[in-house]
Length: 116
Length: 114
Image (cartoon, rainbow over all chains, first blue to last red; front, side, top):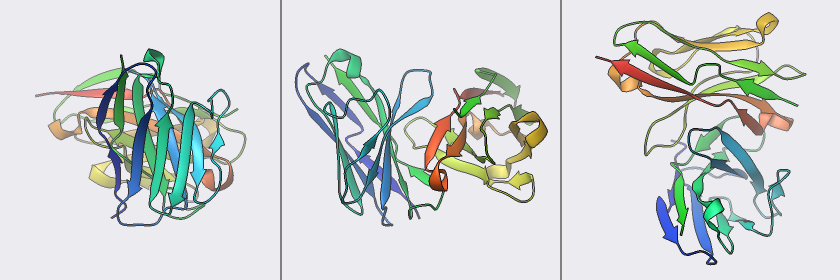
């Protein structure tokens, strides 16, 4: 149980285009989902917290207009990287909590984004 | 601000040997502490967590961790490693309401020698 999927697993796009990454909780409902970014050989950095039906809360330094997050249902959150640039190339990981305040996050396998 | 330090970037041990991965945290209140393992192509998997109570926590795959408040540490241990334990290990502290915000350490890459 508590499986989280991400799609796509890898994506290559041209500079200036937008890319959407999906995060789904497959066997549970997640009121809260999180988006992380992982740089090569570095730690995971929390980008934003997404609550179903409300606006995402972004961490300091994360551009909300560049990284659009939508959490339209209890099983789906999307991250759209708008007007992507090579410096946006990274590994993006989502996670989901069973219920708000349950203290345990379940992670997706990640999406590798390469912007040319 | 809360932070997590994993002093060892890379550790190599022989199969069957014991393992200890170090984790130190900085957090003003009682911390929620986690160890996750990341294997290529797979999501981070929770090994164990500490919220309160017994300071020695048992996890999956034969791992355990001990919370030592006086040392601000939460080291991960396993008495005998298997080749399948080779992966990246992350220690994290949960902050905020319900420990929702996870602050991760830099990670320790574990290599197993046959």
